[in-house]
Length: 94
View 1: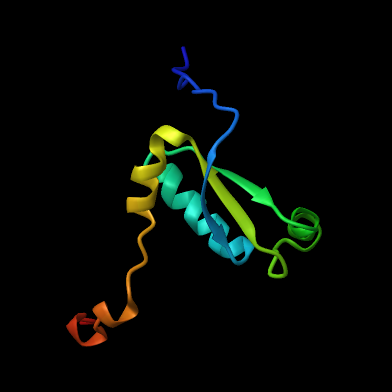
View 2 (view 1 turned 180 degrees about the horizontal axis):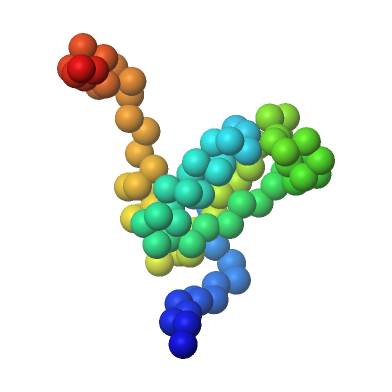
């Protein structure tokens, strides 16, 4: 009745990047998962506790890991875009 997606199991990933806080880590995780790239957040220090207790972590960085086969795609997906390329004058608000 319900079509379940087949989960692909992977144990160890390769390092992709380090997010400075839980907000940035959640953004990266969301972007990667929207492109069907599984990822894992590995917390440093007490960051996991802080995220559970306070709802957010801004004190410790969080490492992001992805499967080795998706590393190149993941790097291409999370390329930062400079804000200078977003001109507010180009947007029509009316």
